[in-house]
Structures are given as C-alpha cells and as structure tokens.
Image (cartoon, one colour):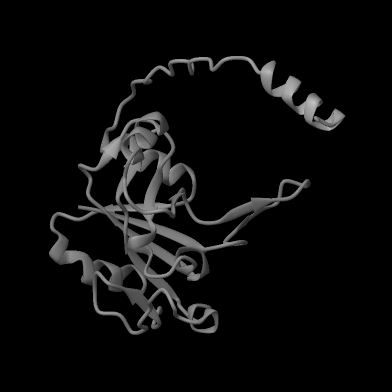
Length: 189
C-alpha cells in the first residue's frame, strides 16, 4: 500500500514537463588583432611587450623586474622551485611568477591560464608580480570564441586573468594589487 507521500511524489514525477532544446547562442564576431589586445591590456593596468624572438625572454624579464629576486617559472631560470605541493608560506615569498598563457581574448584583454601552466594553483594570485608569456597568434576575438575553444579540453581548473589585481571602494578609491599580483606584464612573441 502506498503512503500519501509516495502518491504525492509519483504525481510530481508524472507531471514533469518534457525536455526543451537549448537556445542557439550566436557566435559573435570580432577582431582578434594584437593591437586591440594590447590596447585593452593597457586600459586595465597591464603592460605588454612584443618580443621579436622568445630567446629575449630572460633579458626582458630581468630588465623589467631588476629588483625581483625570488622568481618562480618553468620558462626561464627560477630561484624558487614551485610545484603543486609547495607550501603556502613559500608561495607568499615569491616576488615574480613567469608563466605561459594558453591564449588571449582581444575584447577584454584576458588570458586563459590552465592549471598545468600555473605550477601551483595559487601562484598567479600570490606572487607580487606576474609575467605571462603568450603566443601573439593565440588570440581569439571574443569570450564566446574563448569558451568554444575550451570546450572539450582536458584539465579541470584554469582561470581567465585580466590585468593586475584591483579593487575599489564606495569612495571610488582604486587599489592595485589588493587581492593578487600588483602588476601584470604580458610578453607576446
């Protein structure tokens, strides 16, 4: 014999609407130019440098960050070894992280940074300064295209980074580096 609860749940299950198709989202076009990407980066407080050749990476980083001694990177000689298990206390001492971005988004100056490129999940936000190396041919025009590019890629965690960390209060006082890196340098090659 069915209880009143079971009868009610059966009635709810029986009255569920059928599945509806998802709406078609248009793929918005846009310009994926290096010039637009750099302009957006600079408008949000980042700096961009175009490297004629990737062999100039170490010298450019040294010129841009002459006082940063505790450097974490797998792209150039590092002074701090960082792995997924590195303690937070060690991460907190890092002056500069130099990481590789997967691709950039021209419409907002953001860069997709997959977990595999971070060395440690917290490194991009804990380091005092962040430099991201990005292939200038790896730009998409819009976030719609960015998410389409991510669809089906392996890996669980990643983040879109756009400019240095910033926050503002009700009095409109802008603070750079409040919750993450104080500066972002994008090195395009």
